[in-house]
Length: 515
Picture 1: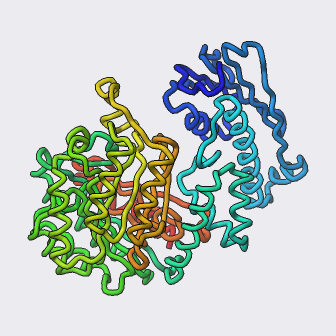
Picture 2: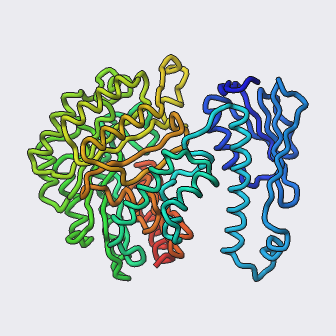
Picture 3: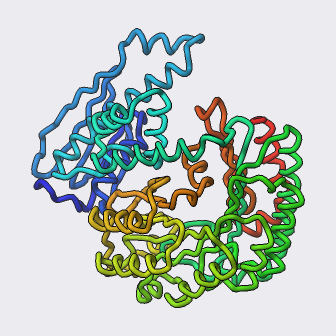
């Protein structure tokens, strides 16, 4: 195998035990995004592949072997020096310190990933902008360092040396962590919580979408039944939270597309929230209007009657050809009209979502989108790097789309950042996803007082998020953020409606455990 050739057909990974299996797999996937990766285990027969890895544990050390056709018979051993055997043995006793054991394991995982990263750089001749980080929350890592007492320079050095993050991404993570700390300084993590309300219907399903979304045309007769169930969940959850006097900080109504609801349906939902939750002093109340083809003046006027502070109008791209390809059944002109209508109705905090890496979109097309968005002057801008998940139509039927080209690079990401800065915005949150084009990130930019607080809370996992509706995944935070437990609602709309009592009881049990 020649240096720099990274689009291999088949890669095998043989694990002799399952320690750090997920992290090892994801890091190899990041370097070889187009390869077929086959995993086997100790007692299974090793798979024939263009490039083979074998991960072997020896005591508290790991050996990572690799073999390609060109290097057949050559084994590269990398010794990973773990913690002392005495320290690890003490963690096996009945009275061991769980926190210490967790830290020791994390230390070992970081070393495994560092050695593997260096090996993959050697094999491919390339580096990754986020180094060996395989998680989705780099800013959370940076914030933890700062909150531990590190200076900015010390945290930056740690990210570069331990995680091999590029200087540019290190600077971005540290800057965002500092801004997040400032934005969250008045949020009560221990006694407060946030609320997510999911509306899983959309005008149409986008090519790249993997969310629990349902085309409104086929599900129109289920919307009122869905609202019946959702309003029941709202009422019951509010009672549970009132028992302990917890304070609601932010509300986010997302989806799907919440504005697929008709004005009277929106009224019903918002009335239920107002009746059962104290929304008078929220730090933020967001409705993700999302699709321009779902926005009308009547709906916007209805929303304005409630204490909603922030909405989104999401074009994803301002190139009509791309909109048609990805299944967004609206025009660029409709996006402009919807945005202007929202301003006319008095909304002064409007976010716009963009996606870079969409099929056929090169630097020039992204630049065109940015020029059109700049002319509209939203208050915040969220730039997503395309991530195609297994449940997306683009992945499920990839043979139909194999001629499409997907482009994202650092130059394009820099261009989006430059535009945001020129619009008076600075970054305030970021997260990453699996299978992102170019191994980049999603970044939220906002003017000084227009940042999305809920977005930060859901990423940093410092406060419980109670999620209502089909597909809702509540996050309950224990031990000051050291442990997260989830309470899941079923994704299927019909199941959610039929099993609403079960969903409520799941939440009751989970929340009471947290309280």
